[in-house]
Image 1 (cartoon, rainbow, N blue to C red):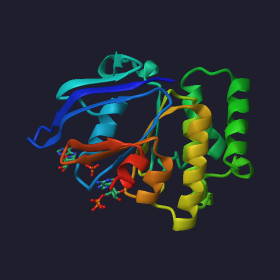
Image 2 (cartoon, rainbow, N blue to C red):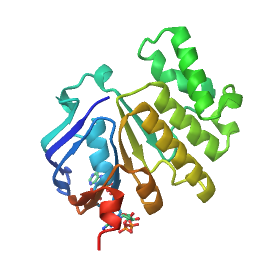
Image 3 (spheres, helix red, strand yellow):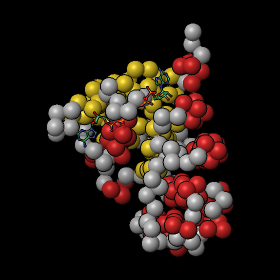
Image 4 (cartoon, protein in one colour):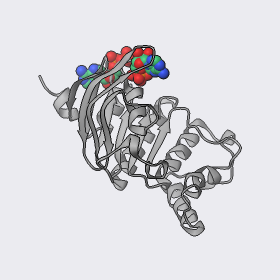
Length: 226
Ligand code: ADP
Ligand code: ADP
């Protein structure tokens, strides 16, 4: 569990593009923030800065009140889920799920029990010994989600995780993501283009436009205001 703080955050890329122009936001412990806005408005940039994958030009990004650029890699307790799944193709599903835990020196029986728990929650137990290429897109996305939850991280970052799935699977998965995120109470930022996804997942929606926050509020506040 961890709160996330953004304080007057700016990002100017080396070519001079000002992608983020002074964003401030306090994300509460266990809160699910959905970040929406037109393409090019800075959603991925902001997500990557929280992940510590992109330098911050000015301002401050904190997780549990520590500046992300000062966190050691082992303290960077964040799991990301992408639209292209980003699974290791040469590893089985079980090995993909175990990978992040092994890197953190988790004991073997703890790894096994966490994998089993995640596999049951996501109904991927029958596929544990398959390779990603032997799975459908929907099954791969469940594995990607499984890899995020086995770590029990304090932060989830989702970058349009469901946009490669068909409409029926998207609805199914968004229900599961909401259930798992609530159950684990993991502080989350979720980037999407899908309005239904945004409305069903968000505790609060953040509308970004040209690198600035245009609106922040609950789905009811944003969509039911006259
Ligand atoms: P794109 O052209 O890249 O799809 P849009 O301008 O259609 O970008 O916006 C993308 C998403 O952002 C929309 O699906 C919608 O969910 C959300 N969005 C945009 N503006 C608002 C707003 N004023 N309030 C709430 N959500 C918004
Ligand atoms: P979104 O995720 O909302 O589509 P991005 O964060 O990808 O937006 O991009 C925001 C702006 O920053 C865009 O103008 C984009 O062209 C620019 N940008 C993104 N990545 C880079 C980069 N590595 N170098 C230079 N400019 C970039």
